[in-house]
Image 1 (cartoon, rainbow, N blue to C red):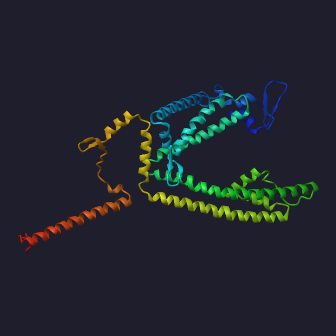
Image 2: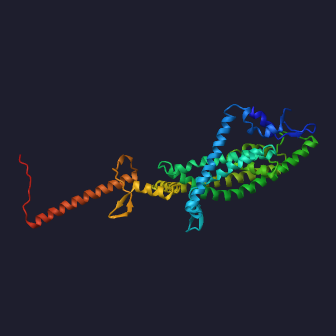
Length: 393
């Protein structure tokens, strides 16, 4: 039923009936749809089943209420610690390269989703004014879902098993993917417009042959009607779907343009599909190996998450927690430290940690052996009798 209500708007085939005061949309099979019901079907909770109607209403109200509560808590944190310090938590300046680095990109995306969800409310209320508000409503909802889902990566950073991989994703997107897209966009724009000119020439010749009635073989179908279509079609071709373009290129009625098109196609496959994508794989592999070598990276991520969570507490609450997990150091009660007493289990250590532990044990054995030898030498030099145990057979 929901699909029937939105079909007229999705098809974008509508007309105005001047004999009545409503707008109607007409689908491809001639069925009419009420304009108001088509655009404002999300506000009609009583017309659907409970899980599509009132249950959705309760969930939407809970989401908006919790977002407002979260914004109030963030405002309280900003007032307590200051706007500059609160902003520096998320954005850290790299002094060496003089650029900004986002310490918590997943958290930033989650904060942005607050305002996108709140922007959906006026769009939903203005749905009967224009079709544009329904489109904006859907777009904001889709973006909010994506940004909210990314927030799970924030909690995964402190896990030893997947924490380094989350950092790898951040680093690859921020460095390798951006550099690759800058180079790839140059080739994509150039080759796509070249294909657009070739297909336009083929379409012009095909129209002339059709008008003269001289169609021979399979009819040519122009799959690049505009420069934007050419850009999208060329991008699709880079991920492996090139048979449609090559089939239509082979059906071009102009021999010269068909030859030029095949040459451009071969150059594009060599320069983009083979060379640049393998270059991207090599860059991502280098980033992966660099981060993988830092075995203790997950601990640093864990510490960052803890510091981030501590900022949501008041100074009194943080002091109470500090007194509970720390102990005084020496006679100065103000100097406190975190004491950990843990027996190492070699079965759960990494290979590197096992080697370090084995080296420590070997060093201790060697020190004990040298100490026993030194005592023996000192005893012999002093002339004291040595106690010897003999076996008699």
